[in-house]
Structure formats: C-alpha cells, structure tokens
Image (cartoon, rainbow, N blue to C red; front, side, top):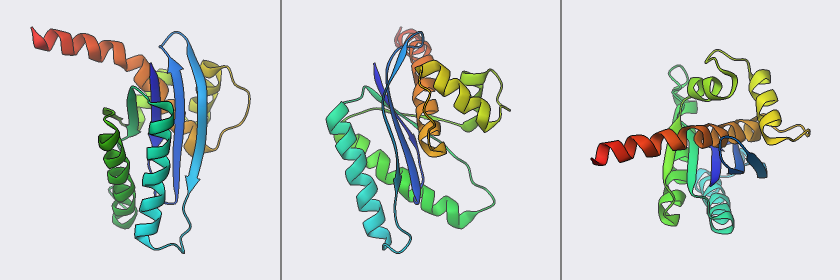
Length: 166
C-alpha cells in the first residue's frame, strides 16, 4: 500500500509518501511546499493543487492521510489552512484517491503510544519506523507520521468496513 500523508497549511504544506504495511514501511519521498506570502491567494492555492496533483499522478497512492486540525483561537489561520485543506481534497477527488483524516492526538498515539507525546518523540518514531537518519522539516515529518498512522489504521478500518457490510 502506498500512502501520501499531508500536513495542511498555506505557507508550509508537508507531504510524505510511504509504502508497505504497519510491520514494514518504506520511505518514498517527502517535501515541504512553501508558498510566498507575497503571492495572491489564488496563486498560492493553484501551486498547492498543482504539486499535490503531480504527486498523486506520479506515485498513484492507494490512500491519502491528512491532518484534521481544529484551530479554535486563530480564525484567520484556520481559514487559510481550511482553504489549503479544501484544495488538497479537490486534487484527491480528481485523482480518485480516498482521503482519511486523523487528529494530532491520534497520530501521536499511533506512533508513540500516547496522545500527549512531544514533537521530538514523533519525529524519532518516524525516523525509526522508516529506517532513515536524515532530519526532516517538521511539516514533512508530520506528513510522514500521518502516512504511517494510516498504514497502522488501514487493516482495522478494512475489517470494520467488512463487518458493516454484513
């Protein structure tokens, strides 16, 4: 299974691709897309859409795992992140790739065992799970953590879907 993890954002959007299953995952690619604050909003969203669409076409992932953030205190940030989130979902829909959302605590629990884990613990587990030593940008590391979370959750989701069909 190939999973594209996405840490949504307008200024910085993390993308991370992994392949395998919960027992053996392999790092395929990661990047942090950056849009310039001087760009007009339509240009920023277009760039995100184009880059996500390009990755979807090139790697043909089986699923996309995206962070479902709730930003209660910063309405302006939430609005901008929401626009990036929507553009990403549009690209996935156009490519026919299912989208799964995970909250930050779900990701931390999946990788570290506790929803209160520190960022450094999550990054350590991403590196250990993928067998890589290089340092990742925080947004790319978060994207890879989302992809790994989906690899761990996918078998249970498939079983639950099978039971629901009965």
